[in-house]
Length: 155
Image (cartoon, rainbow, N blue to C red; front, side, top):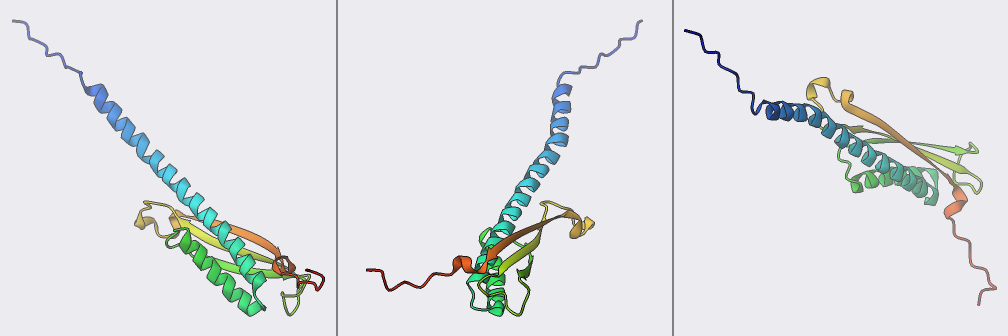
């Protein structure tokens, strides 16, 4: 008697292998795409916040009011852009350095620094392990947003 060898039927195994390969490659690809979109959204929000803060500072009557308005503008822009949990630090500098930045020839630079958390990051790595640092700056001459007084020659 000859022993019968059972032939293994490999029909369907290519589908299983393809499915596993697709899952192994697709999941990281989707994560990378989502992370890029999240960083881009945060970068846009940070840049818009710097522009708004610079304008708010320049339109204020003095430095203290300008800083308060600029910080409020940054918080509002970040909230409007839908970047939940994105915190920002705001720094101001002006040239020429003096007691007040609100003089006619001053140039104010506003720097906004923030971080974006990457999506689906494991908590075991900690909060800082899956963040991306962002910063933007905006420079504004103080006289840029000041209206000129109407002259008496206008009809």
